[in-house]
Amino acid sequence: MNPSTRHPARTGWHADMARLTLTFPEDQYYYTTLLTVRVTDINAANHLGNDSMISMISEARARFLFEYGITDTERDGTGIIVTDLATTYRAEAHARDQLLFEVGVMDFNKYGGDITFRITRPRDKTLVAMAKQGFVFFNYKTSQVVAMPEEFRAKFDRVNWVD
Image 1 (cartoon, rainbow, N blue to C red):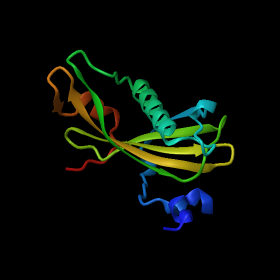
Image 2 (image 1 turned 90 degrees about the vertical axis):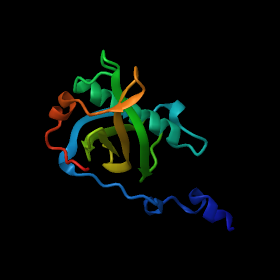
Image 3 (image 1 turned 180 degrees about the horizontal axis):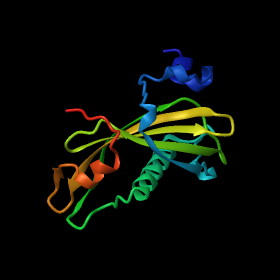
Image 4 (image 1 turned 30 degrees about the horizontal axis):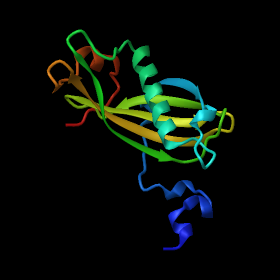
């Protein structure tokens, strides 16, 4: 195998290299927050590392849920658990870049749905990444998936439903 095919950075990084395509409905973004890329978020290739991006996505999710009055775990033991994460990277981000995280929800079902993220760099309007986290409601006391609480559902009346 040609070394340049194993290491895209050696031949130039291109957004069209992603195998996944993530697109989300514009009307499903409910929240925005700014996060700054720290020096400690930078990897050996001198840009925002995957592990740090996942941490930033988790922080944006936590801020979104807090803003909507959704606690980590209710008194009955019910909370949200992340079931999967898909991320596509479109551009590099570097130390001290401010990133805008637009957070939304879509594809609700009886037990959960998807939390979506569009991550841009406002300074130059560059799309840095798109991501979505699947989630379900989970009762930590009984260790079982449970139905989405009506109070949660009511907060997001524009969201589509899938069966």
